[in-house]
Structure formats: structure tokens, C-alpha cells
Image (cartoon, rainbow, N blue to C red; front, top):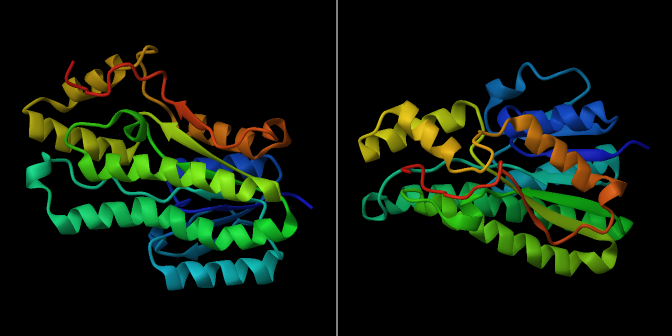
Length: 253
């Protein structure tokens, strides 16, 4: 049987690249996304469901369907997340903080909560959590996002300890600045906050890495496939940055 893989927020961006990469490796792919339009044109053969990753009833129903359809799950890519507000901490509304933390952190928690019993029962599995270099360094004007991404690393390390005795591995990928629409929004908002041009902020992010480069979604996807493979059979509890080596997380350099 080919690997059974669930990717949350797989309709676009990093999640879509992950689904492409796993499908290319021969895996069965199940993709969720909160955006129905993002699911409309995905390849034939992928199972898709519109799910808000932060809503427990919806996540519980999703895993009930997975158990009926597949009878288990080999790989969970807990990838759902939103950028949240870009502003100094004193200007962030509590409701914006809560929404950002809910999707990023609680989304990963709920996916792991319902995947864990399946994987423990089969005594095998791999959970890959999408964190961020913001979860390693912190980022100015991104307090809720950074806080949630740090917390996801704590969640991952705890899951690795809880599930390891059952043969289940858990790791976190920390993308750097990833080319794409979400990052474009961050660049524009950060430029407004700092009184800089979008291009200056972009160059600042690139200059903040030793490889002087943004990351592409496929770079993250390739790491996810590796972490789920037998080649990484003893890799667990690890935080792996795919970021061109961030040396200065503040783009105002």
C-alpha cells in the first residue's frame, strides 16, 4: 500500500507543493483547505475537503472520514497557518492575536490529536509540522505569528516524546521567507509599518540569509517528503530550517 498522506491547507502555497511532491512519490493524498476555491482545480486522484483547521468538530469529522476511507494514516503534514497582523505589539487587537494563534497553533494541535490514535494503533507514522524561522528567532512586528510558531515547536517536541514509543516520529520544518502571495502581503504590510518600499523590505529579507535568497515552496515540500520517508526513520523531535540560513531575522538591515 502506498503511503496515506494528509496535508492541511494544501490548496495552495507550501501545502500544494507538499501534496504535489507526495503524489509524485506515489503516495495517496488527502488535502484540506478552508478556501473552497483553492480546492476546485486540484489534480484528479487527490481527495479534498473544505475544513477550518481550528474548528474541532470539522477536524474530528475529517479524521472519521479518513478512518473510513483509508483505515489509517501514515503521514500528517500539519501545515495550516495564517500570517496574522503586521504591527507593533501595542497596536495588535486581541481578536487578531487570537485568530492567528488559533489557526497556527490550535490547528496543528487538533490535527495531531486526531492523528495520534490512528498512528499509535498501527505503531508507525510521521507527523511533520510547519513552523517558521519566526519560531526560532522571533520577528519584529509579528508577535502573534512568532509566538504561535515557537509554540508549535514545543508541541512537536512533546509529541515526539509521547509518540516515539509507538514508532511515530514528529518533526518541524521552519521555512524562511517563501516566494508567493502570502509573503507578498507580509512585505507590503511591513513596508507600510516601517516606511520602506516593498522592494527594500524584500531585499532586507534576502540579505538576512547567508545564501542571499528567498525559499521556494518546493524546497519545503522536498524536506517534508524526506522526513516522512524511511531515509529519516530515526529523525524525530528535530527542528529543521529550510531558509537559506537566516542570520538576521529583521529585514531592516
